[in-house]
Amino acid sequence: MQIAGSPFRTRSLYAAAFLLASDFPLLETARDSAGRVEFIIGGAADELRTRIHEYRAGTALVNAQRFGGELRRLKSLVHGTD
Image 1 (cartoon, one colour):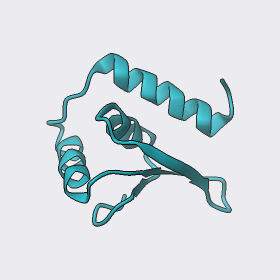
Image 2 (cartoon, one colour):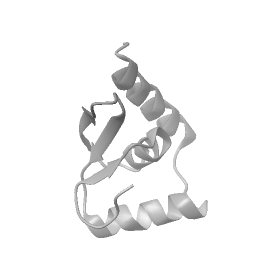
Image 3 (tube, one colour):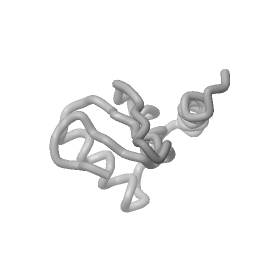
């Protein structure tokens, strides 16, 4: 995961879903030559850094239904399903 700078890039499906549930926009997804997906998320660098710190520390809170919906949406992007 990259923290310094914007946009934020991560390969973690759960971290990406958490950030999207926290109202950060998904800018795009990219695949490397091995087929791994990277999520590119926009937003202010300071806010992203704070939310990722909370996520890693286990103190972050988001709406569970929103998180689940974002997780399903990302999985469908990764696997190409609707």
